[in-house]
Length: 106
Image (cartoon, rainbow, N blue to C red; front, side, top):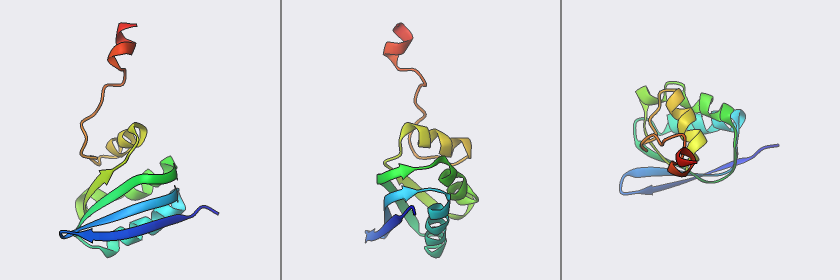
């Protein structure tokens, strides 16, 4: 069974949820409940320690996220940054070009 550990840290009024393990749709529901319990507080989701991040988790996490929470992201791969943007959630990073300059020149 997939497992997700959520380590909560508070520093200077901001909550950091450091995620470890596997994030799929089931564990994303658990993470979603954790976010809802924090209310409107500023939250940083740290994905850098995830072993696996399934695309289905993005669907669960983005449902009504922009309207209810002030969430920042750390440690997202390019693919997941795009997935969040597809669902209307800004990850705070500027969109990158699909091709690198080296690929364009080739």
